[in-house]
Image: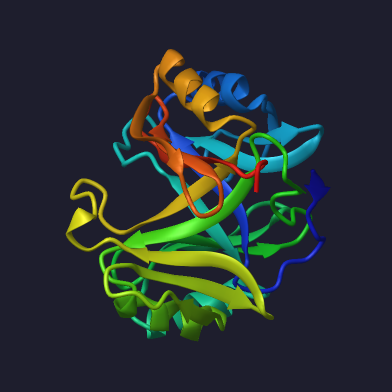
Length: 258
């Protein structure tokens, strides 16, 4: 378990958030699954809470207005030193900015955007709130991956906007690129071709650290969620892809044995 650095290099995934229909029920689900506790957060976009582990913020959950019927999904936020400049860069590179940039109280400044393929992500200009403050514990974000049809179509967009260096896996049947900043891997792009879920399209996937992937997946089902991909061995540990009761998809990963 480690505390996160105070300031993220622009382009580094720094926060994840979820906007749901039933905030209370969603809090109960993640409190049981990840042992999260909650405190109020900025409410510029409606009711919003921050999830804590050992007093350290790890994620955010907000509530949709009753008349909004939007897909429920975890959103990955990428750090920026200037949300307005980055938003303009996103637009000039073929992306779309749907929300903001706008201030989130004293916490910072944000925008919600999508890349040219339609995958939604956020950008975060930190002020009082630097983002996820803990790593390595059960229930903390451990990785972020863009799942898309073909990495070549969007890799240049992210490289241009955020300055990533991309390292591709050399394989005829595996389309995967790791994104690096200052020589350090920070995220990845995974091209799955026709296996891309039609009901979701290209999307950013949040991975959460767990102490036992099989047990956590079983608990997801007991709490009203469901399993999309059963527990299996991956390159970084044992993984499973699951969804919460409102359908927000995420991956659980146990790296303890690696």
